[in-house]
Image (tube, rainbow, N blue to C red; front, side):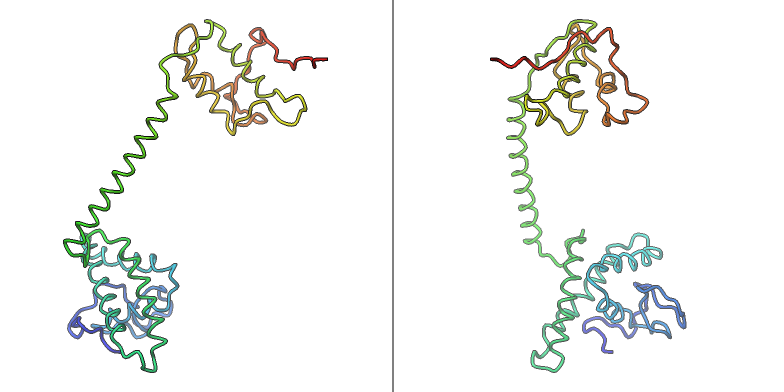
Length: 264
């Protein structure tokens, strides 16, 4: 197996990737090396060789497996590890790109190049150090990020402006002592059907919206209404309300919501 051009692997010790222990019959599938172990100076090539056998969805696990191994020896070495892997992949990509396109291995070379390019794309997604980027590229990226943030801020301002149109400092006051009577009316409203009995008069996906609406826009005797107090009357599951559920006392059920008689 040829060494990767550009990295002096003859004297380079194996230290970045977890090796296949010599004569281990049950190595981890991401270990780098062969049955007799990992020959000195060959870990870069064997890392790439192993990569070629993996599906794209395993690239993350493969990288993280060896990163964890390296950090076990060099706790502050994440950038060093990334830079080494990046260089190994980049050199192999350049090597394949410069090969004679009319050689007998061209089809295989293109397949390997596609795998390396895909893995390089993953590396770019986790690059915290702007590896291989020029200063103008870094500045351009920062300016693009600023532009996106400014656009998001403008959108949020418009959303806030629209939301404020619906806000009010005023509230609807419920007579002191009759909060539960009002809640009973709300609960009856949920059960009311249209004249043809086809569907409910009002409908909500959740019950918490009722509690939040009442706590936000209503008062009892000009005093704020506790959300936690009223949500007990609006259980998420009416068929299984739970132990915290509370019923409206009969003496406070003062009104009945009934359909009007049909006009002749």
